[in-house]
Length: 257
Image (cartoon, rainbow, N blue to C red; front, side, top):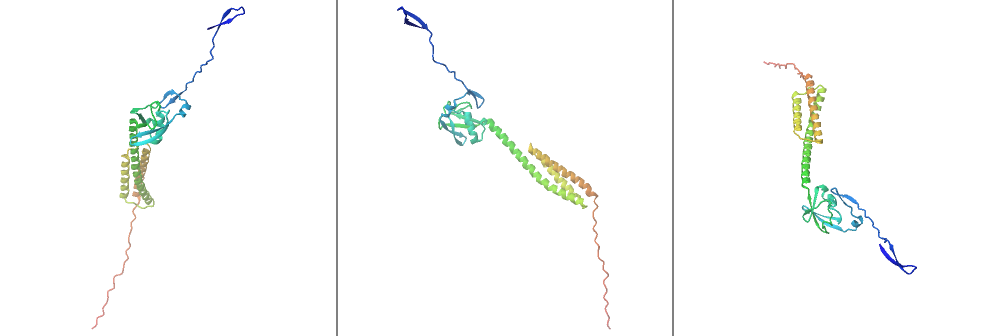
């Protein structure tokens, strides 16, 4: 409290008290938060300050490959990984970024980590991701190999199925077929069935394998029925009629004295 002196009407000084007031006001700043890559909740930066931040040209070393990326200096390493995805084909979770010999987290800011224009950042593929990629490549190679093997069997089955149709047509027309021809065809079909059984297949390849197996089984069953029908057909006996001739005339010679 402040005391002020003033002159009264009777000429004496009197004191009065006043309560000071302040004209200053306090404004409470609102803090906004945002979820950064990696699930880290951090204070949201002012978009205005970020837009005015300088653009960095970074040199990215990925094995023997070199990339140059332009990015805002107030971006995070997680945001840099997203940009690198289009260049390298690696997903952000498959990337590891190192700067000055230290691996950087997704939530770390470039400028806070000391990254400058023309700085070098090392990109490496995550070892777990490399192993997973290798396993997927090996799995895909097996699937492709199975498809090729099944396709080869399918081509052979197509040829054998055509022969089955030809034999079926002949028997329906009453023409007897040599039994050895039917037996040999059954054996050839069974060989293809054995090949199918030896092919390891999964997914779509397994479905194709089952389909060809059913085709082989159907052809064999058809031949078994044709074998019975063929046995009932009597063979056609072809006879040759020989032309007969009269005995040759004996020449008579006239005897002269």
